[in-house]
Image 1: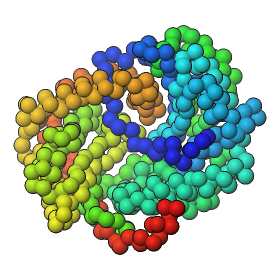
Image 2: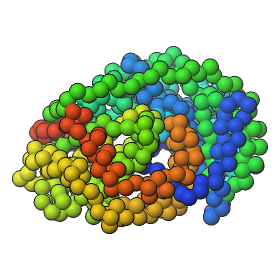
Image 3: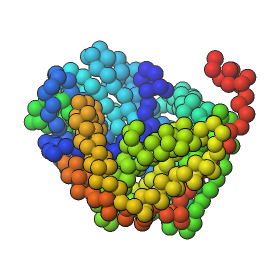
Image 4: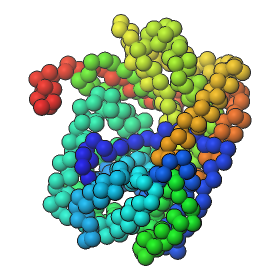
Length: 450
């Protein structure tokens, strides 16, 4: 694929925003492929996405990042369509295509004029089971992925800090591994590694085909039958449990990398929709993240950036839809003359306020209004509608979960927000990383820019 280095998305999905009714039509082929269709006739376009239930959290040590590496190799051709043909055919039909890998999934997508959907299906079905994995193509793509890692992580102080932080925050959860993989693992992938990964996971019974756009559900199901029904399923056994062990005290580290500014990351271990005993806790954590980082009027920006003026940036994040328990993160960069220790104290003060005091009715209403606004905005995009459906289905929550989101958020009370803050944002479950800037080698940086 052209420009794969820049176009590959290593992503953590943003929190989804559902609607009152998703209106998804579902059909499963006899080989296990699930097909989900949502009509949107506002433009004569359709987005087609194939989601595989495999990502970096499925990978054992020694081959970390192999899901992402295989994503690159998926554009290297089959008997029917040699390397380079996939992108050329999509382009000739006026479409766009790309792919992305996350912790819990790998997905491929095309956006085309709706009448060209068969082109997308024929190509995706062909490479689902007939991919060529050749040593010379792997050698070339390894250089691309190595360079991608250098650009995205090794030469990016914030990303480097985040990567180091995850290795400390997690003891045995596979979320401790970077999606792109560790350098030594990337350097030692073999064709046999990739072939085994491909044969196991790239199968119709491990995939979900999502189509959103100017289509009729039955016509899409018929088309899926035509192109995907002959593909053989794999024998996929359930994954072993990989539950993170209990953290028994605060963890701290200092990351020393060339950088211009210091910064701090703090994170608490929290449940997600998939792992919470009571789902209302996950929705309350979602609202809690919105209170801290829900736009310019949110607490971190108003208190730390504009109020005390001790930070130039501050934010919070929470992965509601992760397959396993995740982190509730806070990040901040100190203003000139301020330190990361001062920021740590200030961030903890904001947490303490949430643990001691109920948020006001007005503030809670504002957060919920933002959720509704986000829902309306997101529905403008066929791509993100499909992404919401694909994510929920792939992590095991089911696409129907999207229908519950707004009502569940609206049911969150100020007492529930305070309760999850007290229960989960505690010192013994906290990890902290400080970025201590090192001198930047301008000569090396200049050479790297050439």
